[in-house]
Length: 437
Image (cartoon, rainbow, N blue to C red; front, side, top):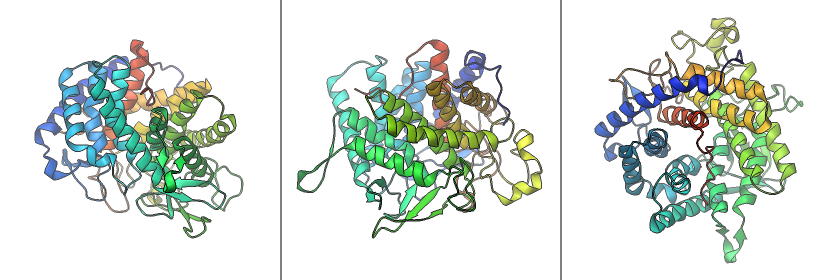
């Protein structure tokens, strides 16, 4: 990508405010038409949100979106919507033992609401506070209990595929463990053994940095620095690492760009969180190495405007010629772009740049946001429920509606990245998930 040095958050202020104006329309439209019996909205088809049964991993993004809308605009109707839906629908996700998605679900809902209370944005209420805190404590412990041990003495939160499977996505679910730890919680195991949620978060981050991210150090024939594997496979009998794999990317030896973006954003947030704690210098060095490598790979392997194709090894890219040397083309007939990956990665680049005081990453994040928050990605069509167009879900399974469609996680993360920048523009509190205690 071509990183611009002429952009600032203030220069994007008009785009940010327009995004939230359009966002309000999209949220109202979805809430007017969506019924709980439909499950969770996942992606749009013909401009209308539809569900897709696999796991209900997008519910937190749907309900978290009006909470972010209130945060950005102060419009009370969106706070009321987010609060009511959190109480009505999110309880089952607090105790869900079958997924690795607690950070997606419960930080986006209970976590955002508790953060707003701590920031003084919503009225202090002791019982409401305890309700949010209890949900977040339980969520962090349930997520931490989904645990596999590795042969090197560490471990990881295993994916919904089973105990053999580490997903790179889960680096962002570590927020649930971090918040629960921040609230003073632990996981109780057999014989009342107290298990530190912070230690488990650190072990999972180390495993992700070691096995999901490549460093150009000769690990295999496809070891390119910053390349990310979607899934890492272990022998569950002895914890030995076996091989990379991919569920949603083109192959185990190419880089699915949404997985790359999860790594960028997740590691950057964890760097910020651990910087708020005493010590942990050696651990922070490990995850900083991973964050830098993944972000450098993004910058080197994304079109000029910072909006990626869905996988950097997708075979149809050969038909596009020098695709890295041109802006992204969401209407090309060969391979789709994935705007949702850009929405996630933008925040990762911004946070890493701020943490490291490195203008290269910071300006790259602004470059991605500048393109994403404008047409043809930002969607002004009032008859279309999606906010950010040209998103991909599961390309190998054909789970996306093609050019011009949106995803719930893409829309949520665009709102989150826009809110991050808007707070900087308006001089608000720095946006951090651990502002809960």
